[in-house]
Image (cartoon, rainbow, N blue to C red):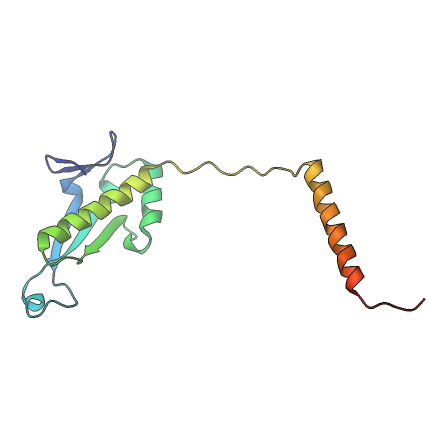
Length: 145
């Protein structure tokens, strides 16, 4: 996550501009004593993915990967409140955004091609079934002839 001129670099083609991010600092929940009631240390990072100029396929994968963090307007909302320091939470939220966009930028794996079983494997499977059947028949009750 290299930062230069207010940009976060994902790869050679994709960058996150500072203008595509909005940060709000809110009070964090959880332990922290009286400090938690006074200081807004949690970060709400909003990434405007719809206006970021991402290629369409990457944008759709990003929205799909974001899940409930994505809004209908094409924004991604990330909340970070792991740390007690505002700056650490800010860095954490940005790092999570970068990793999400990196994952969306990866091309999807190729689709699996169905293959037919070979003649030999079909014969082996049928032979094994036949042997198993014989074993089970041998366990059954003996009837007088």
